[in-house]
Image 1: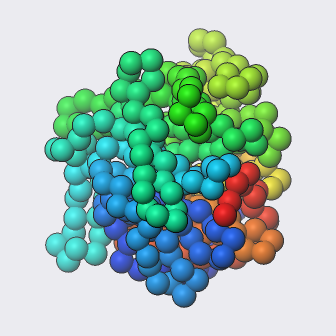
Image 2: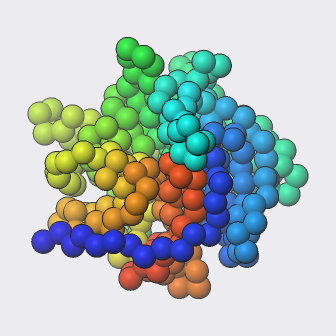
Length: 314
């Protein structure tokens, strides 16, 4: 039985330009990106905002690496649909100024950054979206691709080293891969599919290697973990300490909680139709920090289970 409930939240920050990629830091602040502003932004405990770096284009997912630098998936930029009163916005198409996607490495002390990867085996990255580091200090990231008026890219999943020395294409094609995460034991990779509102799992069998299911048992090699209908899309995700996967859900905005063995077990409803991401923080990692991107809000909520602590932080 799926438990559906309204999630009680507190607004931490307003007037963010399509926030995404929240990271809870040890000083109780939240580091996130503002995709429409092109910045990496720090939200202090009192709600004040400080721009850490002006990255340009479309900074999307973010994660702290083993060296204390922040690594950002930059999707190359969007065109936006903006309400008449300027309060609401959502991405609709590839930016008219789009060149390519990239992985950026940012020094949080100076705001200086560089492009770490912009291609793999000579093939340009299209729209890097979400990122997660494993215990070894390597990272996995999704490339959703870009959407144009009459066509769209087929996406991919990559694995890379944080020193810029190696990048692998792991899964391709994958239609609109978005949120990406690791099971607590790091034996399983989770990937959310945006357009279908589906979550897939892959057994990790080595560095940058996963076991794939063959046709006709999977459309992308992954094991399907949920199969609900309705008008919804999946965005970025976080993992609970017990292994459940919490996925930001669009259109029918909220957080979908999926058990690896039972499928969808909870849905926490929120008003904003673009709930794009969630991270866990607080002393016991029992607080959820959620990006309500259509309205440009950072929300905080009590979470009834502990979230999984990320491998690296500052």
